[in-house]
Image (cartoon, rainbow over all chains, first blue to last red; front, side):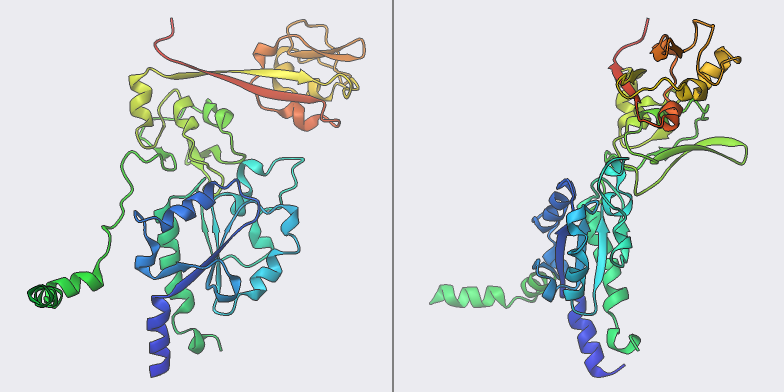
Length: 151
Length: 200
């Protein structure tokens, strides 16, 4: 491993930038993401920063059961994120639609139909600790030695 | 002057520097009272399906037979951790957090009935639901394809071209009628009341 790569690994492990997008959630999961920012859970001590800008994001957190308005918007948003990138589905809705996935409703879950999802966190909503531990366990798999393994 | 020296000395202490750079909040543990996904106890499931009937999320809980034993299984990604299945189960097969403890303390039971509603403007009296109903078949095996029945004990029957509900209280909430209706005219609603104290 080159010196440059080890330097990149060291920096990336302490600088994970997160953007979250609500594709038709009831806001419950968004509140749990918000709780991660609070002093009790404090994601910045792990080097996770929320910018909510896809251009500088590494991790995209997706909540919600995919309403029809996002049909033409989520894929362009995913394409805007620079590599290496990863998408995490938060809550039951992006996985199965859960209670909203009934006959005569317009939601179109799972979100993995539309963009590649690397990890799914079940729960309605999941605990903040579950969200943090997922991001932390996923980050080394995706970002470590990215330049060397992508070929 | 003294204070400045005091501050410099204070902030150069190795212990202060190490705690400043490595400070972390205590690792977060899930408290024991957290209502997590339901887990199995060692009690025996009697296949009464009370958990499946009460569950508000589609496909979240299924009672399946594995190795000759009936067992409820939770599907993560569908389960919303509401704990209603734990409260509804008469045998305490499932557990999560302190639900079983307060269920015992308050002598909590859930009593459910089913309400059948037929939209007469949509119903065309074909009798599909009446024939499909498994309870109806048991009461009157000679139920004909038109849905008419000579028995007055069936849940519903087609009478003079209209489907009429006779014995709502016999419904088990399987919703077979909803699936067989081509017009979505029939709806089965669950009416649940929670009871405290021992039933007389």
